[in-house]
Image (tube, rainbow over all chains, first blue to last red; front, side, top):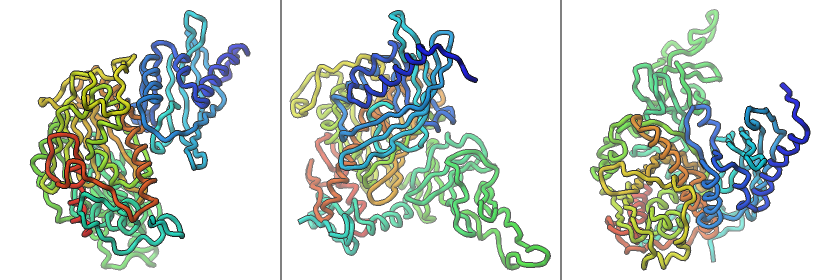
Amino acid sequence: MTVRLPPAVRDEIEGLYATYVDLLDEGALEAWPALFSEKAVYRIVSRENVERGWPLATMSCESRAALEDRIYSIRHTSLYVPRSLRHLVGRLRISPRDEGFGVEASYAVFETLPDQLPRVFSTGRYRDRLERADDGVLRFAEKLCIYDSTLIPNSLIVPL
Amino acid sequence: MSGLASGGPLAGVSGDRRWPAAGVSRVPYWVYTDPEIYRREQQRIFCGPSWSYVGLEAELPEPGSFKRTAIGEVSVIVVRDSEGVVRVLRNRCAHRGLQVCREPHGRRKSFQCPYHQWTYRLDGRLAGVPFARGVGGHGGMPADFDKRAHGLEPLRVASRGGVVFASFDPAVEPLEQFLGPKMVGWFDRVFDGRALRILGASRQRIPANWKLMFENIRDPYHASLLHVFLVTFGLFRADNPSRTEMDRSGRHSALISTRGGDRQPTAATTEMASFKRDLELRDPRLLDIVKEFPDTATVVMQTIWPNLIVQQQANTLATRQIVPRGPEVFDLHWTFFGYADDSDEMTERRLRHANLMGPSGLVSIDDSEVMDLAQRGVRMSPDREALVEMGGRGIEDADHIVTETAIRAFYAHYRGVMDL
């Protein structure tokens, strides 16, 4: 089913995803939680857990504050080999909801570790819900990243 | 000079190996890289007289439920048969050796090889061989072909507290004897007979030798230094009451620690370069911990030879299964669980605390990354050795964390099994 969206709205939503990717890939992690509403839920889950009805998330943040804690930890408490990431998001499938929008899209994340060639780090599906806050800004109210593989290549540090 | 050969990092390193004369206070780096050592480990450790973890009974809720897993590199099927008995079968057709089970999990009435459709019952018995009696009087199996002799190879199975173990060795000692009384005690603390509820699976591929995972858990010295997150929030600190216990053989261990109530800097934290006193969580629900076990311990990490770690940290419970995939890589399979009688609030808490652990764990990221770095280091000089003298050179239990005794004990047992 094709839903006709005003082009300005599609532009706005695509802009949100472009910003999302840029902040993660270009190292501005501290600015990333601001794309989420205060009570937003962010989860990275394996497709297997989804299919088996198991609630475990590989990463689970139940508020913008929890996202900020995660970013703080990435910056200041975790030890890891430095790496660069590249997120690619496929075409957005947008469905208007009573309040906001549902958005689904495929994603691929490539990872480059020092002295190594880039590799596919994760592929999967975003299943998101956007809402417009009182300030008029469109943000993620819910973001679910469902990854295809059963295995994660070593460590998942930066959000998908 | 390092032992790096011109033909590549591992060329020419097989052959007779001799453990350093200093004993288990040294660990030669070739144990992490040598393909010949790895091959011997597969035979003597994983296919030898030991009980390997294969899963939780709660993963097999009804007759026909199965999962595919591995002991060492050997693929096995764990299945609840039509009588409800949990069986563990080698995943190999008796005919041409194909894996008869390809799906990672599911529910089945039988297993069928895709090649010639040999069919096996859930208990492994061979049920059907197409054209066994020939077609139109031609061919078929010899008259003395006995289906009973050609089932899927069954392993010995033992189950305790809902945890399933299997062994390739028919002469393996009973599980409780294998664990020893002290380790049975720590095991039963978590697996106390209550039905378990699976919360989910998480799996990662770590570019390091499998033994480094055990050494990591058996090394409380690192936990107070590397894990800034743990230390900062007092989940694990050098000045917390902690101890290391082992079974008589040293092959199993438990690291037991109690969280301190005080987050003030002490003489111990001043030696941690990265101690961050001012860190406060913006969403404190992450560490909303409730006491749930009768003792005072807040973290118990148990290692069970040769492939299991039982984790209790805060209110997150998990098994971690080690699956070696070569000398320099292993997969770590985490199964997070709670109890069937947990309140919804407790389940939420366990799921939230799971952020500490797994491939994206606020604590365990440090470990998977450090194992990668350790492997990169040892790969370049297989003829050098690790220095393991913290807390002395012995292998006895310790009532503090400034020790590597459990690593030494691991290798004392390992040397015996491996004849090194």
